[in-house]
Structures are given as C-alpha cells and as structure tokens.
Length: 621
Image (tube, rainbow, N blue to C red; front, side):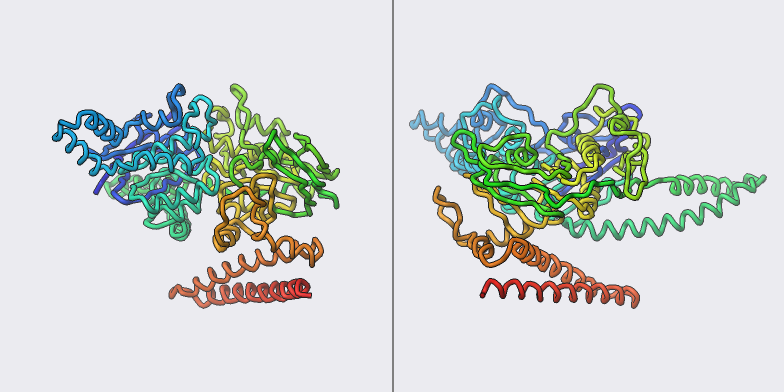
C-alpha cells in the first residue's frame, strides 16, 4: 500500500541547486533511512514532506486518510503550556474519543450515546492512553509533567516532540535525527519501540547501529541521483561498495571512449550527416560524464602534533558536588600515552562537569588535577562554531594562518586543508551562516584539529555529521597518536575509536570498563537484575575491578583489559574474513590474499591469548 509519492521535486537557493527531479515513494511497513552528505538537502527534503517548505517544481502526494507525524530538528511549541498540556493539546483523535466518552458518562440515561462512545473507546484502544503517554514521557526523562515548555532545554524540547510523535501512533512517521539529544539507554529503548510498534518510518539519521537495527531500506542521494538499497546498513555498505567499483570501471571505459571521440571531433568532419550529428551529440554526453568529479576525498592529515611527555594528566582524590548532587567522590586516575577513553552515562550524571574539571576550566572541591607541561588540549564542544556576520569559510581557517604545518617540515595552504575536509574551492567562499548544520560542525572540527592538539576531547562529535564524514573522522582518529576522550551516544563510533570506558553511574560512582560499548552491553545484559535502591551501586558487579587491581600492577591490569578487548575485535575480524570465502566467484589470487590475511589474524590471536594466560596465571597465585 502506497503512503507517500514524491514526483520530480527540485530545490534551489539562488545559484545553489540542492537537488532536482528527485522521485521516490514510501509504502506500508517500510522503514527507510535517507542518507546523503551534509549540505545536499536532506533537511530541505524533510521540510518539503512536512509542508514547512515547498519544492521549486514537482509534487508530494500523500494517500488519503493516513495519519502522518513529523519530528523536526527544531520543534515549535506553545511555551505557555506544560509538558502534559502539550501532549493533551496535540491533534490526536484518541483525545477526542476520550472527551466524548467523558461527556457520555455525565448523562448515563442516554444509553445510545454512551454505547457509541464506549465502542469508540474499544475501537481506538483508548483505555490505556494516559498510561501510555506517561510511560513514554518517563522513558524520555520528562517525568515532571507540570514543567512549563518555556523552561525546557533544546534537547528536552526535541524529546517532547518525539514523545508527541510516538503517542499519536501514526501510520507514517517522518523523523529528522531522532537519536540526537537521547542518551544510550533512551536510544536502545527507541529501537525496541520501533521493533514492536507497527509504524512505517522515513528518517534521516547518522546513527549507524540505529540504521542497522531499525531500517529495512536505505535510499542514498549521491551526485544528484537516488540509489535505493533493500536491506539494512550492512547490506547498504556492501552494495554501495560494489556500485562504486562498477562506476570506477565505467568511468575508465568512458575516458578511453572520450579520447577516441575527441580525436574524431578534432578532425572536424565537413559532411554533417545525420549520423555524424548524432555522434557529435553523443560526444558531448560522454564529455559530461568524464568531467563529473566525485568529491569523496578522505581527510588525510599528518598534523605536526607536539610530542607528549611522560606526565600527561592525573586525578588525585578529586571530588566535586553541586548542592546535594555528587559528581566525583575521591576519583583517582592517571592517563597514559595513547589512551582512548569513551565516557557514557545517563544525562545529569556529570559527564560535562568531568570534562570541565579535566581541562581545568572548573576547580574541584577537593583533590588535584595535574596536567603535564607538554599537553595541548583540543576541545570539541557541543556548542559548535561561533558565527560572525559575513564571515566566509576560508576566513575561519586563515585565522589560524595561511599555511598549516605538517610533519617532516611540510605544509599545506588553508585552501588545501579545507579541501581535505570536503569543502570544495567554491564552497570555501560561501558565508558560514549559509552552511548546513552538518557543514558547520565539520568546519568546527577542522578548526579544532588544525591547532595540533595532542589530547583530543570530543563531546558528542557525531551529531549532525553525515556518514561519509563520520567514516573519514574515524579513520583520522584511528591514526591519531595522542590521547582521546569521547563523550558520545553514537555506539558505532565508540566501538571503532575507544579502548575502554568510564561509566558514570551517578552519585559520584565512575567505573572503568575494559572494552568497547558493545562489550559493555553484553556484560551488563549478562548480569542478574539489581533492585533499584540507593544502596552502594553494583559493588558485586564490579568485583573484577577490585580483584584484578589487587593482583596485578597498574600497567599489567591495563594490558590485560586491552588484550580482552582486542581478542573480541580479532574474533570479529576473523569471522568477517571467513565469511568472504563463501563467495563462489573468488579468483585464485584473491583467495591467496584472503588466506594470508586470515593467517596473520590467527597468529595474532594466538600471541594475544598466550600473553592473556600469562597475566591470568598471576591472578590465581
């Protein structure tokens, strides 16, 4: 059943053409993710679907009598209402049914009206509506139903808009970055909600695990064309890579044909027959294809990072509290070279306060934070770049110099640097205020990295970044030789970049977990349920930490944790390689390459396991 048809829509702003002649449709039970680079019009398309904007040409057609809800990035509310009043003021037919039923109760003698109202309550399953919306608001951390909308933060307003959309139980739900401003627990609840509820979805999201677990189709906008993929994110990656290979091969053939036809054109045939005119038309079509430039350059930077000394960053019995709320309680930790720490925890447990203590922009109540002399922080905050009126993209970078130093005495110009951050020469002379939200974040990230920090602090770095940029950022961070701290709800990003986690439990409790976020979820899910009391949190669950620390030195303890994490990663890589052998079309050369790669992984696993047994034996002494 077709719910939505988009026919030949186009949108331009002045000389900038975002897209033209795009057509697609959404059918019942589809869960579609719309994927594209920042600045190519994702949000504009959603605004057109929600009628907040109109296309320059084309049409958007909805099936009659279907219920549609929208979640925008910047929801609008009546700020005089409370949270509960906002829910009850929404255009929800169930609310009308409940109102009619309550009126019928006031006149029990009118049995016909009462029966009609009762049947409507049954039909719409309206009996548990109040319980439903309170449960959803509770899950989204909006427990104070009387709180005025005017006092809510931007993130809370986004969650209220999400609650409104979910409660309406629409036939079609259109979402713009639904996981932004949600903590990890909320995101996993939302995944389960969509798995349970029979909703048709069309969304823009950069959360790749969310794509993997929720969506059954992906539509990619690339170079002005739409490419549908009937599958989840893993399937999309596989088929997209195959498409790129085909396009590269076709481009090579086209270039050869272009050279041949160019020679023919230069001979300038005098007899303009119908056949030669047709060939001339074909030539210009080939020429257009040859000159189509792809702009998917990867960020390849060898920044001239100052070397870290032996002392990096130390926390000595650090405590911090705000009134009755304890953030840190005698926290101790010594950062080592090359550490990659992920920070997770519910909102309000003190993650941002910890970063402010770490950068010494906030003083502790007790204890000391000692920073090494060679440490240079690069702090990427959620606030993003400060926009100055009529400032161009190139001017932002030139504020740091016309040339940026790289390793081995080399340097690149500000223009070259921006190109590596996916800003074309033309785009570099756009005003910053005209950039999309994702493009501004990318520019801000560039300004942080070009200052050559050796200790990166990234607070929600993946918000609003497109998937292409995320892959590039991950590649850069994997090669970054300094220390990294990441606060993020992007589980895919965390799994790829970090080695261990600081888990903020609240009430000043911070646990050091030896592994990725996925490892942490597996560990947590394997533990027996703990009663929800205010007793000492999860002491038994973290006996591993105390026992290990008592038998091994600090460096050995850290090595053991890293080996356990690495073995899981190697096991995953081994399985992925083994799966590749199932392809019947493999050449002998490819089989040999895969076999060599597989043997290298097996050898590394054996080496790591041998060291793991050595360290584990010490624990048993």
